[in-house]
Length: 455
Image (cartoon, rainbow, N blue to C red; front, side):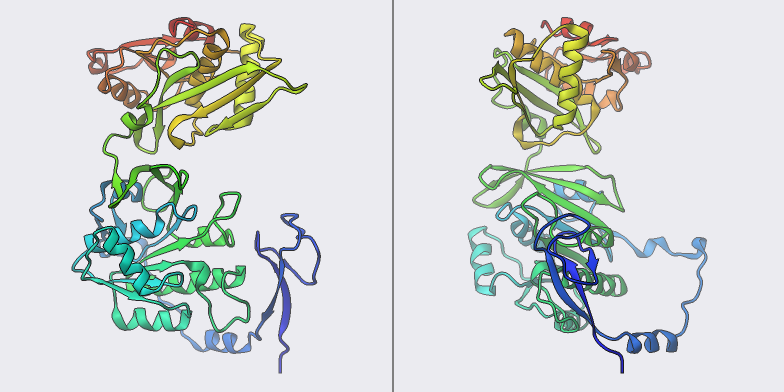
């Protein structure tokens, strides 16, 4: 008879150790190793060896039409998903507590009627969920609430009821009796998610999994969880803010980094039809340190306000703080301003913020960051009717960016009179863009771009 093996699994990164250590050897976290007992594997080996091998299938013989998309009726969510929910897909939804994950799932259910939706909750009772649904004026005759956390029972219910959509709220509360560890551990999350996804694929059920996040903002549980699912949606924003951004971090059936913008009010999450107006609303164009960026998020062009505050530092080491933009990239931009344009920020605290809670990673934001910092330092406001975008090289040159046509059209649509972008992007513009009521100014260097921005 085989003995039960004992392993120690890190609750932070999922690394496995043969013996207990105070610190995880992978992520260097202290006190995160948890004891896990592994059952003998003879039974599993016998089951695998006794079963037949699956039949081979040629790629051209596979029937892609069997998998169809289901529109949710929520335009911003459909955009993020790539055109709706794919049949037999698994979607992981993460975000801060109270940001709107469960609310969005409740709003989704009645829009799929008459298809049956199972809401499996391990955090709230049916009475609590009903009270929240009534407060949000949600009526869904096709929604069935199941307060269950045992995986084996959940799988039996799914097989018996044959729903179109299953919502798990949340994966951290589900446990399997086959493992002795408690719910929420690395082993339980990984194995429970794997069996739920396998059941969804076999029975053509759409699976929506709500997951917690860590204090660093990453999805709680093993990294393998993100690899197993088809789509990962991340809620961005703070619980005290009115607006929410849903971003597709991973999507096997659509583009990644697509975003949907919602507004939270008494009736739940409502779509924001024109996100650009939201991101630049309330800006003070006459104040130095503000610039408008034409950004691309997924397949969507957005106008975003970039704010910079430059003040005299009271510290021996000046502060560099960035919200919504990479701090190291901001440091590079400050170095280019000092070396190539003699705009010195030494002895100055520099604070940069992307208004609206958006997080930007694309290189095209470089020019707007540089313009906002230079404007704040020189106390000269940027031309309020001008939008800018462009990547800055270390020599102070402006390098070509992608999707310039969509950026130009969005700026013209919102009434801006000029857009400043790299010269390389103006050489092959369509004639129709030249007819738009906006001046397209191409620049080869950062110095030239700041001149056209009236800085």
